[in-house]
Length: 210
Ligand code: GRF
Image (tube, rainbow, N blue to C red; front, side, top):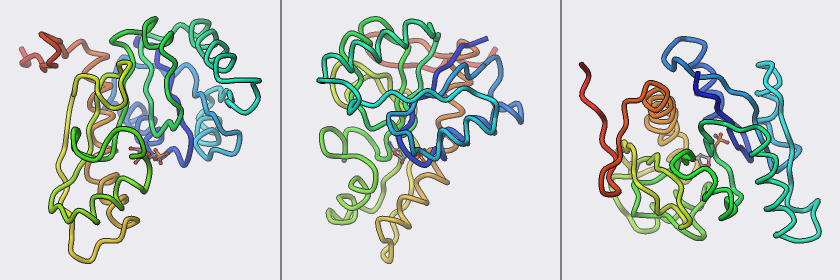
């Protein structure tokens, strides 16, 4: 069983997609041990509790400075000792010490085709606003391993989504979620839980099915 902790900040629709995929057997060998949120009001925490999964709140604002928060967050994660950490719409930068301790065991979902529209300042609706401003015709989502950079770790999986002429940031965000994020993230977790991924020279490969 892949012991997994999911980190969230908002609505938690990606978390919901993962929970549903576990229930329906599209993700196997995986147990969500806890959901961590940085914001006590996060709808995602309610979704976790409804599912009988402990929700833990850990907010930067409750600590005297970032260092203290980073230390407490890392300590909490070490206590939980997950095999995999999933950042599902988590808006807090992962402390370097946590990245080092859980190297190769943290994945993030980003709502664009990395390396486009990613990095500092590209989060939530802003990503889709910038996609529309630039006028690209194809966008999508990416699941990648987390390293010390911002959206820079090895790419695991990507899925393209069409941008329509009449899109608003909101309609585009919804389509990227429905057509890419909610499909990709469960697939990647299932691949990790069933040992289907390898990394060679910083590039992730999916092992061929036997
Ligand atoms: C998703 O678009 C995710 O890719 C991004 O933030 C959004 C979170 O949505 N990083 P939700 O909380 O899973 O509904």
